[in-house]
Length: 366
Image (cartoon, rainbow, N blue to C red; front, side, top):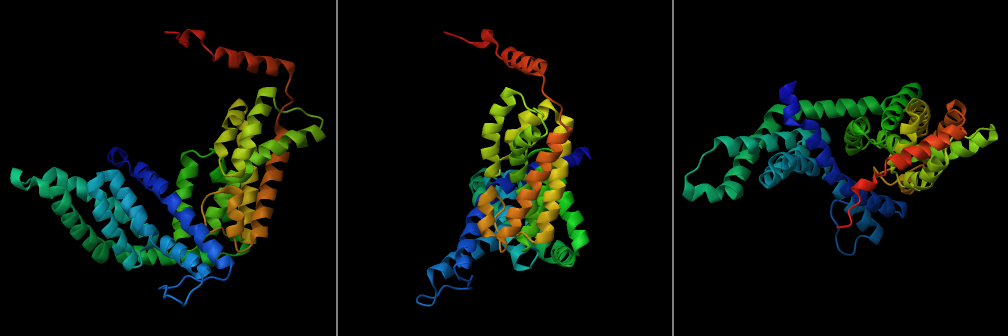
């Protein structure tokens, strides 16, 4: 276990995903816009035989088709630095060529990166040849060994696993979809963009790379709906004759809700930390309801980020709207019911806490 921690597998994966997201978003919007106006993703764009919408759809489709390459290159670069770029790219292309998909790209990135580290550590060259190490020796050896491992050892099992996972998810009935979507929604929301959320994101992004968009849509719609639900809870509580937020929390909501609209959930963290048990309970219940609704109705955004901007990329935009509304309303009602009334003492204690956080001794004139 200690050795695994030292490898920092999760950190390298999350770093690569941070490189991947802009590519997925850009390509996803391109293909969504192109297909919305009747374009199709083509194998080749032959002059005079395609429209601008065909061009956009093809650009997006080609970009999404290279996701295994991008993730492999990102992981390899995170592990081995610049020397890891070339072997990561080549092994990622190899994973794509044999149909190993996104999972193959991830494993290929690890193989490439750690092969680079091994070569740097164990391959010794005379001084006159050291200049060849980054430009020839590392790219050649790491690509050769890693590519052969991908083709002859791990490629076939990964391809079979990917097909099995895809077929399993495609064959889920409504009851299974409800539970699956609910679990994704619950896990996505309970740590507000933290490690659990990012782990689930890596899992559902793997599915999207295989053409299954529902799970990642569930995750992102929960992230979008949670801050909006916290905002709506203020008004729902008023209907119940309750005041559940302090004045400072209301001010926090004014920025948290707009952030949520574009899929930034972290704005509600200050509110949750003031009442963490009730906040997490409301988020979990709302997330389960929203995730389940997403999967049952078939909301399927082609981009993995953007909040409400994801909705136009869905084949059923109305499904995304309903899923967000369900999540928002459930979160708001649960929060309004279980949160306690704010008293004058609560207001005063929070003001005093804010003032205590300001230390005048930290201010320097010179």
